[in-house]
Image 1 (tube, one colour):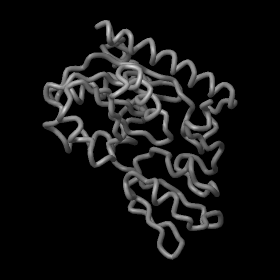
Image 2 (cartoon, rainbow, N blue to C red):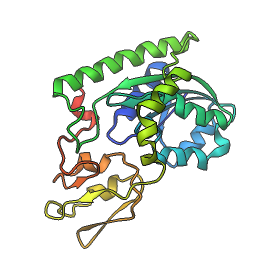
Image 3 (cartoon, rainbow, N blue to C red):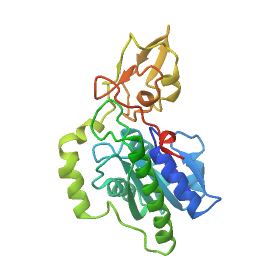
Length: 254
């Protein structure tokens, strides 16, 4: 088994790492940003994909990765994990359909409610203990799902027409256009920014450059919220106007 993920604040990474370790202690896990990920996929036919849904759809960076490696998915057996703050709709199914068109066999899907990562909006913000409870419930669900997959009865969350309708009418119809292209909406508060360069190092798109201690953008934000949730001065926003809470998975563990 090989685990593959894209993750902004660590939810999807944590989920797939736990899943793979429960399935096979020797299983390897790779970010799509890792240079060795394609080689690992070529060498194994059982894959677990994990990613955060955005408006009940797939982040652009992940869609591009799949399309750029078009031939890689043929005859692969794939289980999909979708993480979200509240509502996924057909998160696992949507990615599954994309991969099916590339020749993959989709074994099933799992939806995990995790701490919300949209740090600059008040919606879905929960007390610390509540978020820790969410993570614990997700851990238990992952462990049960591994056993179901091993027994040949993997869950089918996100798979099928009812899930597809829920995803489309629940969010994608109204907001799906927001993920068709990379965003140019990332904002920098120049009074707060100290030019430390942390955002530049973390950005998966190389969208951010620090020049003369100032943030310069290429307007290719994939809305992963990695920079917003890790900025030491809370100087970055995307959807809202101020950071409400910075969320990374390590905050909710232990």
